[in-house]
Length: 419
Ligand SMILES: *Cc1c(COP(=O)(O)O)cnc(C)c1O
Image 1 (cartoon, rainbow, N blue to C red):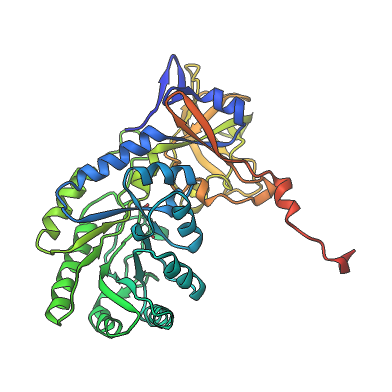
Image 2 (tube, rainbow, N blue to C red):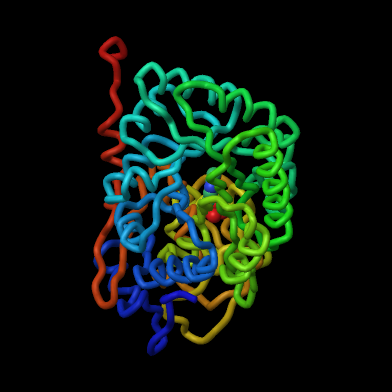
């Protein structure tokens, strides 16, 4: 459930009519709802009420906007970060360092140092090589990095290939078949306290079964590690819960997820860490856009909007579906190809889509754009970076300025020897 609803025929974000935002800030613009973010944080937390000892760390990569992080931090969430840039954002939003978890296969030495110095709560180590390097860096500083070892459980998450992360040939984690041996090696190193294991099998999961399969494998591994004399106090279960993108689509609710987690982990006796991203932010945002013109096509017309693949990359990257509707529907329907202005055929949001009838100048939204939306923006075609707005009741604020193409050009230099 979200707070983007029609009132008197006009879509509102909470109590703010979207045309008011378009008028004030221009388009395209991402619009987030504070009440929706808070609701999703609460529902996720409530779903895990039966898990006594836990940390819920928002996956910052899904929506790293500072104001969004501030809202979620105030809900008691920590942060799952995958770069020092994300770590700095979480800290700047007031999230305590000990509630920050650092994941990712390519942490550089400089990033490890920065994260150690910031005093983050946990490193999720993704390879033996990384563990050895982190241990050396920490030991040289007389520090101890709190760590888990990320396991690749070889489970097919049943989602899009590009967002599957838990199959044997994916780059993430260490193979479960070698986990015991690598854990043993790293646990003996000074500079690290290897206190558990982590898993994250992919994103936009529509089914709990692969998650349950991965957690079962992890449970068996925890037992085996303990059997080998290791102390295991922390297990990170990652993120991945999917959200409905299509009208009427039903996905596992956080309560069902929580019940499954509780059932599978009840005898583990560990602190559990969760890293939800999309399920918190996805339906808390829309991308508001204006129709530039409608162009006749051989079959369906092209509705050309002022948002493009540089603003919302998911359709071009993964063929993802985003529901598209008019902000102020006039009653009619059309079948159209929804495209952006960028000079690539990939800049297509939908082909042959049934949608509200639209004409030049009309406003429309792509829904479910709060996660993996603005965070993936680029300036391709010298279009500048899209703006972001946060709504709270009847007020709204620009929480990320539009970075105009000119400002990006200002950061470029022509060397003297070319002049
Ligand atoms: C991307 C990512 C997440 C968040 O995934 P969602 O599907 O958005 O919940 C969590 N953990 C790790 C390690 C990730 O890479």
